[in-house]
Length: 218
Image: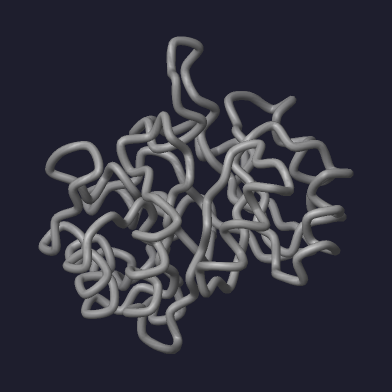
């Protein structure tokens, strides 16, 4: 069995989403601070949601190329455990954010081909965690949450010096296969547990978490 797989449900916008995440046994609750996203929440709304996240579930703020003013506003108002940088922040910016805010930093890296995998090695030197995501399609307006996956064989059996999480097009139907192929111990989902953009479904959240617990067949 896989009781150790840690699940992140990202893009929470409603109190019932927070309850569903806790009830299902997810390890991370993610809040998106990116106006172009249908999952975007205001700082005030995120603060109200975050205070309801139970102890033991890590609260993650997803930002995209955020400047210090924005990060100052978020971190001063919202009780957080992790900052997730999901833009094209260079390694120097990742290190700066980590030092400035005293919070663990998760850096998302989009992958489409073998060349993209090399960036993971670089960011592993400055981030506390890596989020290995599918590179967004050229026509996409969002850096993540597009419901697309990449060729998981590109990172099969790959390991880094920091914990890492698999994202991109995961659903209750394919997450067990993704875990078996990549060996990841952490998975992230957003659109894969929604009934509409930004609207999470408690049943899909529960099904997704349960799917990560199935035996791994190698």
